[in-house]
Length: 384
Image (cartoon, rainbow, N blue to C red; front, side):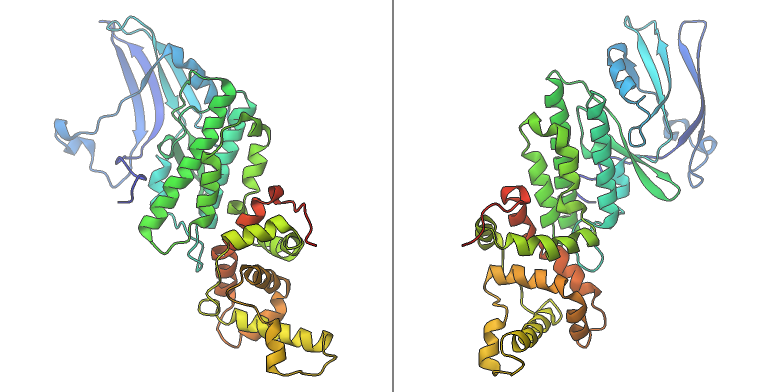
């Protein structure tokens, strides 16, 4: 069992009909019809002590604001189907019974079966995990723009449903907080950071070789939030994070943004402080050799008028595996000249997909993290 992802065993069931009727002695009788999984033993075959207990959560009337949240009718917020106020003789205050839309249980039950790492690159997140987190982001923002908040956003307070084969998250278990509205809304985003941290911990528990730098970066950024001034733009800022980048966005970053950033002193300093040397060619399937061969070809053509000056001269154009700046230039150049580089490396391996996946995912911290911290990703001081 993975840590912090599963803390209970649930039997999924779907409520079809529900009705409350008062009895003569003042009690309330609930009549319901449910669909249970076909692989469960029939209730009639079980002893009374072994029969499953189905109960309704009775919420105090002062918690009605939570019900109004669940009436937002948003795709990623668990929807209320019926609410009925009860006056039970044994209690002085009024209570309410709440019936919600059908769902498939806690999101944790889905995450334990979900592949968290990108195919072949062994880096978190996978596309499926990225989709799940994007839905949570949308739900948190929906609460904010409607002037409400979750109040207790944890991985255990998110359910999920299957709709046409797709997974749809459902925020549940809203709580009131005795703090300012914007402060409570900010805590929802901090809660998302904690959720990402929990998922990262589980991914490392499954496979201690999994690369979690990208998910850890976003988790740390969200957990460190302290100012509510970020709330108007926090959804956009979060979805712009490299955690959500697809292949096209990542490619455009390396081709267009990194070469410009290399002219910025702040970025170069950050690269030298944060980047680590690539394991040159030991895990890049001939990528660095192909880059060096390509650099030699360009140097002969452009700098030596087509005359080969010899290996000692051409060596100065090679990538230096101990120089973090060369690391960044190599990755940027590999994307910029991908078609030419691939033709060379295809002779060395059967497929090039794993090379580009490994390069773009596992090595991204060498470029992206210094870039994000550099004037908000906008180079400001050009190198002299």
